[in-house]
Length: 515
Ligand code: NOJ
Image (cartoon, rainbow, N blue to C red; front, side, top):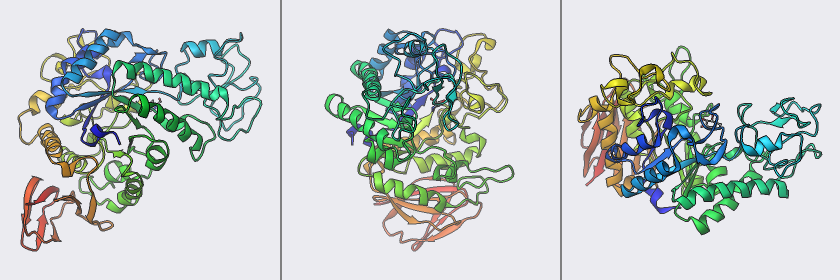
């Protein structure tokens, strides 16, 4: 387990929308550099930046054209190196986004592979032997190249899948096995890209669709073998660098593949949704919904087995949100969001704050899709810094902006919330400080459920000498509890500490500490 990850709190930056330093309407690396002190002041000591590589941006940069080049709209390699060294000076680590499963269809490898003339990249992607062969079980793009074959895509049609082989080869005339030299040549190409950035001194990668490498690999055994091989390289040559997976399956990612942490994503029916995002047309059924009646067991029955199997090897990462899902404000009031932040900052795992969530930025439902964002576009709007032009994001004319800023009268800004004791910003800032000041609340410290009853509130858990009580419901709750030696340490809402019980008021959070 990489040492520094035990205490880190991350900030996620969607570079298009964070800070525009050259007034062209889109965020850039120099803009990020000017905000490092802000990130530090918030209490974060690590940053994950969404892809900054050269790309045609059909999927906001997850369609990489050149892995070793900075997209001109974000600046130059010098700008990146400057950002990295300024971040390191402040004790902030930088993670880039590694996209291992696919490239853009404009990547040089693909340009060569799709041509009818032989090249060294002919097996870098997955082509059928002829265009007349198109088995329905695969997502194939048909008849789009002069090479006589259809190709497999990983996500959008502009993102051809790289060839890491098939775990279970069904069509031997065009599928390579996961052990084939052709598949391992792709692994070596990926390692070369990783080395390029790690040699520059970055602190690791968030890994996009980490489970997507080998095809027909239901149990992910061959995919895990690749990541273990990469882990070996990291352990021997970059022992301080970390790999954090977009996978949401800690057994496969952390235990079997050697990832340092794995995101708890909003997968259908899982514990993340049960906590924060379980909404139907006419009801909000998550545990943290306003007027909540969600079930904590739906979370625990999913989370605990994953936590137990991975706790000695890596971390499950809670995030306030990310660039792929509606912001929390779409589901909850600002008050309830504060409770979720209290929960995340007192649970084990590596916490991630998505830019703007620290001030409760809204999810916008009125925007046209941008760069393959579709419904995700509403969570990718410019950061709201101040009351200045474009809310401090950019000096450009408003119509030039990558996405419009939130022009509503009550749009939250950092400026309006800084120093205001009851703001979302000051709430999360205090919580981060509290987590970082207390080793018992560290990412890897003990965690124990004290009270959880299916369909009932509150939820009570212990971290060393701390006990946290969370009651998002509309009713006050009384918990039998020996309060001898316990003192309140942090709270949101109201409570009462009696000799043998604790009353936790409705919509409240309380952290007690044994003195
Ligand atoms: C997951 C990324 O988070 C998402 O934004 C992207 O569209 C897909 N992977 C494809 O790379």
